[in-house]
Image (tube, rainbow, N blue to C red; front, side, top):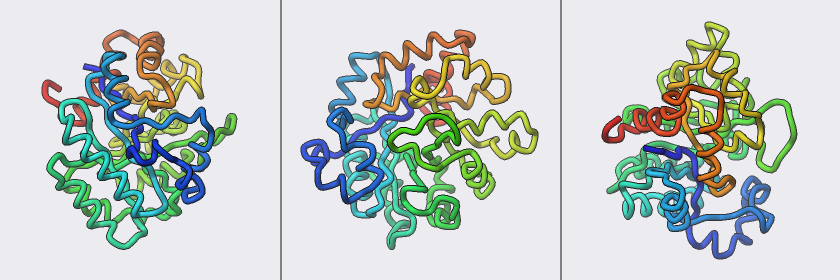
Length: 282
């Protein structure tokens, strides 16, 4: 089984005309202003999955500033998951500072085909980066349901790129400290935070933290995985393409070529995610 844990699809209306959203949301504008920034629907994703041999994809929401846009996006993801329950899993988003955030989280978790988690959260873009008390209503709803978070992560060094943001290891670490029992996935190899797991106190703090491989070839060379395996539990590394930013088949091929044992690569490609998601056969 191959599970792509981090893909992006949008409502059909956003794909049809992104223009109204570009100025309305600064992060969306930074990421999707250019014609080369592809926007995909659930049906586009399914065609890619069939072509590339992906069994299951986890659709990540978008951290809109506007809570109404979060809700509309959630509707599209929940609908797609209901129509293709064996192939697509929804992670939803909320604007935690907005009225009704707790109710929207509960709605997502009690849908006919419920969301399995919340992401891709962008706390800096939504205005609560470091202000982790804002997530308390979501924790009170998602925590008892065992619904993890997936949070955008960014590197404190290296080149700048659209949407890099400021969710660097220091902020991510304080988030893990604030909610130590909440399973979390820090995207993009956690912005480098897992390398600090060589420190015993950091390793303990990150005991419920996973990382995904979204867009790693744009950031690192393949030797990054050897370095990660030396300090971080490879059972908590999840394959992710960041589709449509990266093609799913190319992402699988690149991961298969990294210098790790075959059984570890197979676990990253699907086994680790299957356990976290509670998929049959995990």
